[in-house]
Image (cartoon, rainbow, N blue to C red; front, side, top):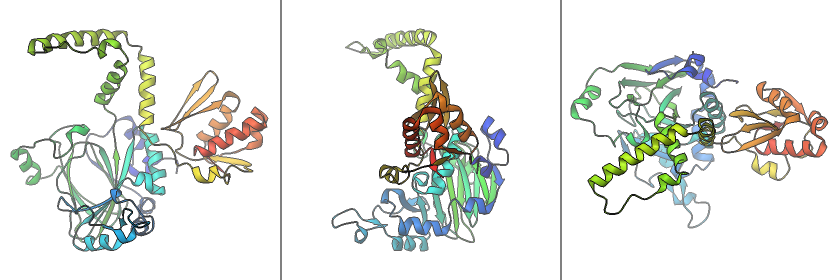
Length: 400
């Protein structure tokens, strides 16, 4: 799979150019999406993998299950330790109409981790993946908006969604549902009025919900499982926040306001600071600032899956003859005077110039195999061995 976006939309090229401003539905491949998460996978996650209690919750009609109601002390790893999620308690809540919510699966479930890594690289924005399992004739959450754009990926059963135009367009994280007062007249519009879109998703369907669109989903005649892939879109406001962080390096902006501060003093200080800010922005080295902001954007995305344990004990890095690129591991590459920098998200990796062309060819053409002998001929045996070990430990390549 070279493109994760191909699974989510019929027009990936146009999607990358510009975010769709209205909801849209894509009818995809049910088998390809079910491979990301199935009912059997939910059982494995709950029963076998010991998910932390902080990753699991349940809700019915906007009412969350009581903290600790899903956890059994009998499942603690050792006496007096915190308990673990009890599959029997989860089952009991499902039978009473509660929706099961598994959070952060982009970190804890490998098929979704790989998929989200690819998707994040294509979109250039960080994201998360949560799963929602809703029993028949039930609803977890009623009308609300999200401060993330969301791909709703239906993998099992059906779910009906009603979408209304935003009350607050393009909300920021500070504008989460419940924090912004919504007048009664506005509530009537989406609680009693006709929706902009009503759609019944089937396995293989993907619903794109732009940030701020009010949505309401419910299961009818059977159990529904969907994945919410939330895109944490960088905004112009986010860029302003990054500029303010850069401005913190200027002593002028760190100076305290005068004592005895009153209304007139604030007005004077505000005029002074806005003037200084305008002059600072005019003289700002945009290229240098852009490099800093790009680094922060990449660091907001998690790193690739790393075989830390097996690499540390030498299982993967001992007697390796050839390697192959792990798709999605590299988010971006930039060329410098003495080689190329691979941006992995939470870490950067430097490639020496003699091997750059060979490694980049492997990255640009997934499936290509590079032998250690090829690298040895370019940079010598010792340096080739160190480079291969580092590439493996960072999750960029895997032994063939």
